[in-house]
Image 1 (cartoon, rainbow, N blue to C red):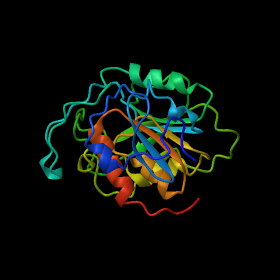
Image 2 (tube, rainbow, N blue to C red; image 1 turned 60 degrees about the vertical axis):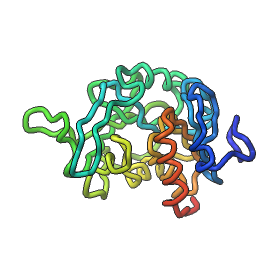
Image 3 (cartoon, helix red, strand yellow; image 1 turned 180 degrees about the horizontal axis):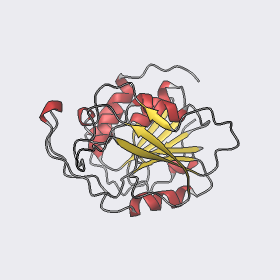
Length: 242
C-alpha cells in the first residue's frame, strides 16, 4: 500500500539525495520501500503522516539546543535544531494529530505538552548528559509523554525505559538527538498499526518499525537527516515480519 500523496514509482534515496527539494512542498518522497515512506518536507504542511494509526516521534523540545564539538565521538559542534526555539512547532503538530489519538512524544521534563496522560522516563546510556549538567547532576534522562487513547490494558511494564547501548550514539548517527533503535522497539511493541514520525531525524523510529515488519510514514524537514535515515533503512534493516 502506498501512503496518500506518494508516487507509485518514487525515486530511490540515492537519486533524490542530489535534488534540490523545497521543504515547504507537502509530500516530496525521499525514500520508500515495502514498509517505510520518508518525505522530505515540513510536517505542518505535509498531511500523509496523519493517515497513520499511532504517533511516535522525537520533536524539537523548545529548548534552543546547541552543542560544542565532542572529540570522543568525532562529532562537530551543532548549530541547533529547526523549530527548537520554542514549543510552537511541536504543539502545532500535536494539534494536527488530535488530542484523542495515541501518541508517544519525547520531550523536556520542564516543557510538557498539553493533555499528557502519563510520563515515561528514558534512562540514557552511562556516558550521556554531561552537556548541560547542573551541579554534579547530568541530564541523563528524558521524558516520553503519552497522549491520547491507548485503550484499557493491564499495567505490566515499568515506566522507566532503558537501552542496551553502552554509549550515547546520537552524535555518531549524525543527529544530536538520535534515539537507540532498541528503545524505539519498546514503544512500538505496545501499539498496533501504522506508525507516524513527523520529526523523523536520522530515522530510528522508522528503522524500528521496519525491523518489526510494520508500516511507517516519516517526515523530515532537513535533507541531510533524510539522507542519513534513508541510508540506515536501505543498509541496516533485516525485516522480521510482525
